[in-house]
Length: 188
Image (tube, rainbow, N blue to C red; front, side, top):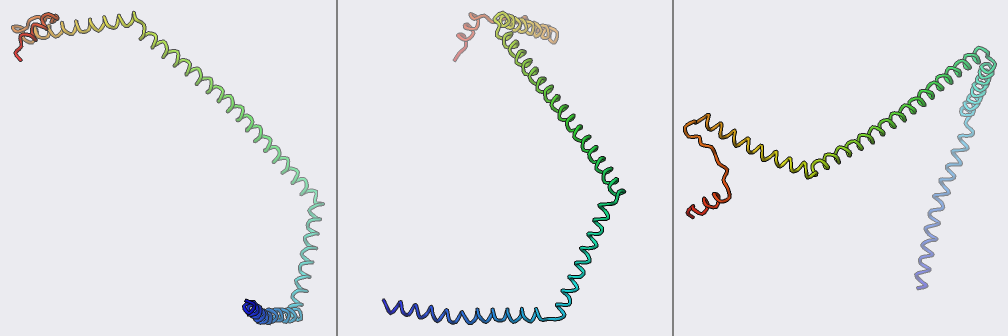
């Protein structure tokens, strides 16, 4: 077991020694290129030119900003634009408030109408149910049915007499006794 530990330690040492020169070599290359880059005269001239141009641009922008800051005509125009924007914004806000109030009122009216409609429908439905369930109305309804049947039978008799006057005989309503007799007389 001790031999295994020794072999592992030796392998690590060998690996570390192999990696170190590669890392060291890459770093040395970076330093070498950085020195070359820093010593390049053309590059230094370009940096100087860039520095000068940047300073000129900053000075020009500062002068222009200072001119704009002290330009009374521009200030008046900006104030006018500001007033116009504020006025337009206030108008928009007022219209939005008016629309919100209108929407709220319309919603209230709609809700009220819906409630009234529901109550009306419920009231009518209850009255119709009460009417249908009233025993007096049911009795009259049954009488009306009977009368309708009676009128229909008379109409059928009249129609038979009119269409075939020789065969037409008044139809009699079968009684329970005649219905029983007819079923008893029939052969099975």
